[in-house]
Image (cartoon, rainbow, N blue to C red; front, side, top):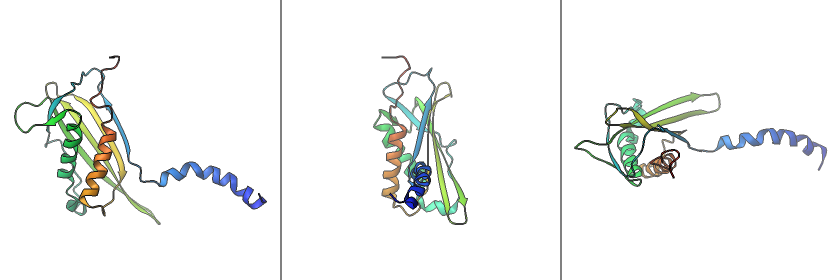
Length: 168
């Protein structure tokens, strides 16, 4: 290896960890109340008064609310939790979506943050929360948005419903 190439080696080693920052990775996390025993099957209703969507008119054509709720119904339904529109549900589910824009000299980015909150209907306590954060892509078709969202929710709902800690 020649000297100029050897001189680049420390620079490349320093930049290597930053290479992953350029990907379109969706970050997900979740937490839950460890004192709550989650049943294998349950019902929930959407808490429309707690739902929040961005008021940016540029995002209105994306149909975010219905797409989000339909996709969440599918993801929760695959785990034994089904939405009901009448009667007393076991839980209330709500979503909060925010979009933040960063403007730079060479790059502008919009980052969306999604929170799903599951509240026990009887006690009104938040018992499970899921979070996701990713760059917003406005050029996706509705089918592509649904697929991306479903993949995100599947990762968010991994190990859902949570098992009681210490239970075998």
